[in-house]
Length: 90
Image (cartoon, rainbow, N blue to C red; front, side):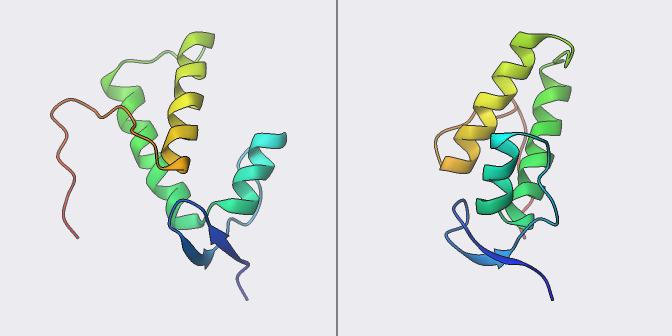
């Protein structure tokens, strides 16, 4: 049976992640409060940001920027969009 959590991004009870996505307090916070669905949406958006903005993940400024965007994404704040990207309709 999947682990159910109340997803703060989606605002409803959904299936949770199997394990924290990374070590430390932020990984545990995501594990406890973010659903698989919301995490998957973030990974897609993160990939677009990295590719379109040509972020070098070895650069601390790029990693800091991506962490800020992730926090905004999960708290429902305005996030940077990739120029020219149009989401598909479901």
